[in-house]
Length: 193
Image 1: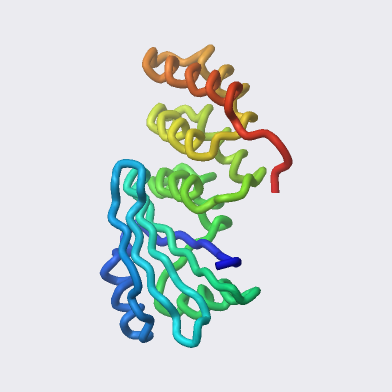
Image 2 (image 1 turned 120 degrees about the horizontal axis):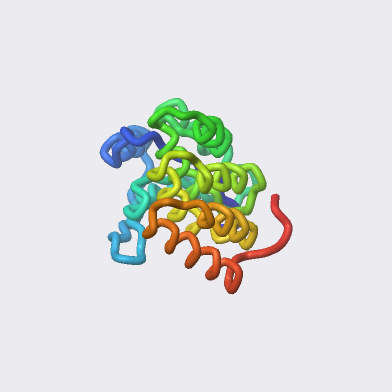
């Protein structure tokens, strides 16, 4: 399949809810890929008239479900998601970015979701992760390490070093320095979208 479009689902949206919507719409269940240590669980449905497919992907590491519409027809994945949005509470990158800037409990989920659903490097997502790296809350700083490891841009190395210089948690400091070193050696560089 040539074209795809991804959306996130809220924490409380279960696979059972997704299955009910797919059944109601007559989408044919096609395949299940079970979760393994480095393999995410997937459920795949085919749409009628060869319009494409939809995938429910559960990231068991970050505990975020991803929904992907795919098609060989240009623009069709967007149409598929817009149609399904009547029955499923999709959230998009912009929604998660807004929540990632808040201090409410939903911020943790928003940061995790950004690491899962953002496949292209975006400056606004990088900015959200950089803010999390230097956050006053150590749980947010720890979460930032996981998100950055999933979104390994070279540009995070400087912030990680800067934060490590003042980090009071010795384990967290060690992890920050290790990740910064890894990013310098292997982090992705280049133009951001």
